[in-house]
Image (cartoon, rainbow, N blue to C red; front, side, top):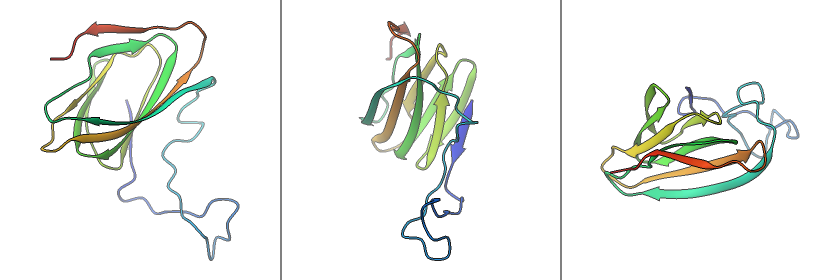
Length: 131
């Protein structure tokens, strides 16, 4: 599982900014070397999951995803790996990887999900339904 946290990461100036006096600072979550995705943007979702709820265990035949936790606390499972994610954490999910996310916090979980389709005609397959 590729988990990444920006909590303690220093911001850097984008290449088009003066590094000594930048107008903004960025934190690179993943680079092209970390996530080798070639495809078409499927979606960018801002989602909110109530306490105790979860996504069904599923996989996408031809879609890769990046999840970025905005607030709350989640348990994220990809295949046989499990990680706890909190605000400022991100995780990459390769296509055909079984995954689920559960809100294990004491508040609603808010996150961004970014999906890229790598091949036409792919389906989402539910392995088991969420409780």
